[in-house]
Length: 71
Image 1 (tube, helix red, strand yellow):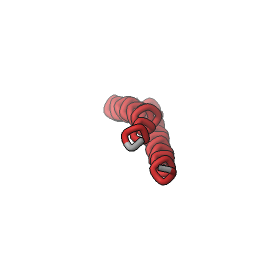
Image 2 (cartoon, rainbow, N blue to C red):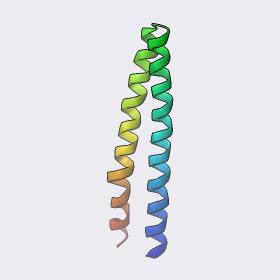
Image 3 (cartoon, rainbow, N blue to C red):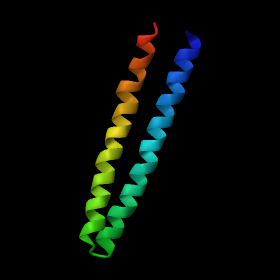
Image 4 (tube, one colour):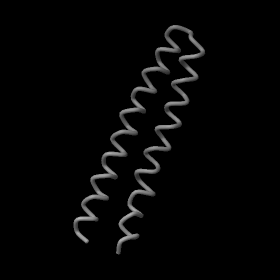
């Protein structure tokens, strides 16, 4: 059971880190869109931020529930 708990913890950390990294990329795209007055880049940056928020939400809420499946 300890192996599953450790695996879920590692998976949770990886998913949150991936979401945070992609969120930074989204902020860069958003700022680039505002800097160049490019509506396409602004839209892409907002979409990336929203998607990354979803990834982080999955990492913080759904991934820990996996450990309960094997209990």
